[in-house]
Length: 303
Image 1 (cartoon, rainbow, N blue to C red):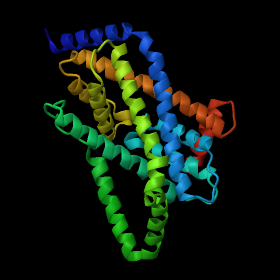
Image 2 (cartoon, rainbow, N blue to C red):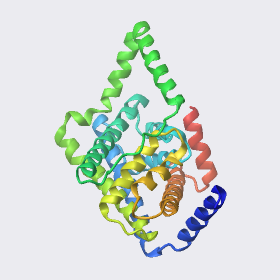
Image 3 (cartoon, rainbow, N blue to C red):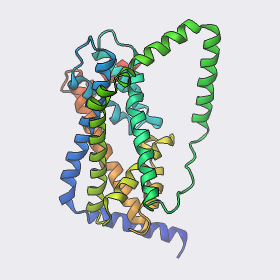
């Protein structure tokens, strides 16, 4: 059998698996995905509330900004939707700054990194990681960008130290919730943990829908590796997610089965996030026309 024949056979197998989905698991998976967006939006809103205690920050407005950014992340490399979250949230918080709001997002991101690393350590300790695949190449562009950023900051410190100190001061304001451990543990961590639990549930249910009989530990492994794939500068981590899913599901299903699951879940989550993001943008700009809402969001990014 030639390589082309093997590829064609794998593609046919993947299509057959999609056609054999067990639909009973899809509706609860949808509900958990929506809950994930909600929990993470509430966590971010509470971080912003600590940064701007004098402002009344509505959960609905921040949730809409968050959902719009998540939707854009699926189509932009290196999580480009984060910028949209920041800019939309800024329009909803009078007197706010881009730097402070961006700083607040690092609190969300830092929790994800710490918990992801902790879960990886746990999986390794229980033997769920027999051997890690080679780290994915992140490409030259992010490395050049990082070097350029560090260089620019160094030059700015020399030329305009007062400006840089102001930027750092505003960024630190976004981390204000961390200065109150009780508030952080009571108003942020529970929602982020709930979001992670929902994400594990989504992966587990979609695995069952694809008739891949594995336990929750494997679902955690798939989720953690899926998160690592976003480090690759490709929209949604496409391609990298499939490679890592095949690694995580080795022994549980064939490569074609792992790829069909990964592609199916990625497409499904992207569709859900995009629809929610478009609706959220319509609510944010008070219009019933999706294209008008998208144009308004684009105008915000250019302002």
